[in-house]
Length: 394
Ligand SMILES: Cc1ncc(COP(=O)(O)O)c(C=O)c1O
Image 1 (cartoon, rainbow, N blue to C red):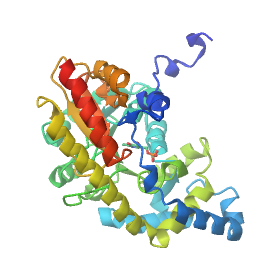
Image 2 (image 1 turned 180 degrees about the vertical axis):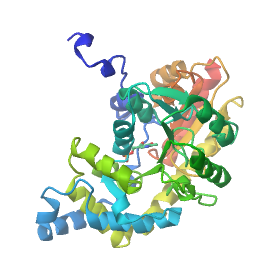
Image 3 (image 1 turned 180 degrees about the horizontal axis):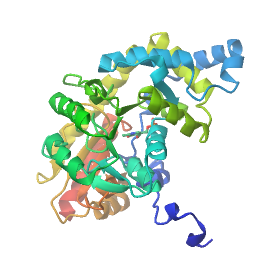
Image 4 (image 1 turned 90 degrees about the horizontal axis):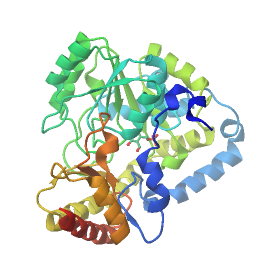
């Protein structure tokens, strides 16, 4: 069918580079650092099986019937309590359950953006967010950076000049860089919100996967204006297939989220919501997270050691204290896509080249490595093989 018959918003939309690579990287002989998936060994399937059986036997009218668009109330209550440890004070009514936190990014575009409205994103940023805001015909403005990450003072000048409608940030163990915005900068950002009319989408799915260092409060905890929409997710903590995430926002924004969700999927699957609620409220989550963090930390440390030992020394690597990714910056002029093609062909090792994480089309010399979904043995073998390809090419 001719392209012109599709809506203009679909013109030029490329597929998400990661989903496109998925079929290749699922081949058994490929070592893949490409996706952003949790390890299947991290899924608490036995506990979930027990809970699902119990729910289907005893609560069939709750979990098999339609539910409210706002979400399953006990889970909203539990989340409102749980986020206090991130410094967020919210009532259950200020929590909406979403079909993955990605739905929250989409809803923020749906309820706030008119074509041409400006959105500030980090450079690089989460690539699905770029695609989502592009669907709403947003114009991107790049947030200024220094070595630590987002330069919040320079950001204020950008906001004054460009008058963006929305800022989208992944402040903790960012996808793709693994970087975390320090506490002081979060505070400055919170104070800055008092001087501007702007929505801040704080997308925070990795914050509970911390392996070293001190936890930092959410930016939302410093926002006294109620302009921050906090997005959280159980995908990386329990299971992404359940598709349970949430947003926390003041009631007037939350109401619009509810209206937006009603026309998308009415509500998130009740069985998934109830499963997450039972898992969390019965106290399984903390123990489970301890186990998952120990496992991912071991994988992170092996990747770090292998990178230090084998990779060419002129690549700059991030030093993540949590999350799932290492980020590499190759010398200017080196094309990571070419390296990827060579690595897959010659060594059957995959990673993701970084340019799709840049809204402005730059970043050809960057790459992301995922460590959560490969065993230490695979990480060791995979990084050695990659290093050989890099060495030869560079
Ligand atoms: C930064 C970021 N936001 C949102 C998501 C989507 O998560 P969910 O499974 O909750 O939709 C991801 C998943 O990789 C992510 O990395």
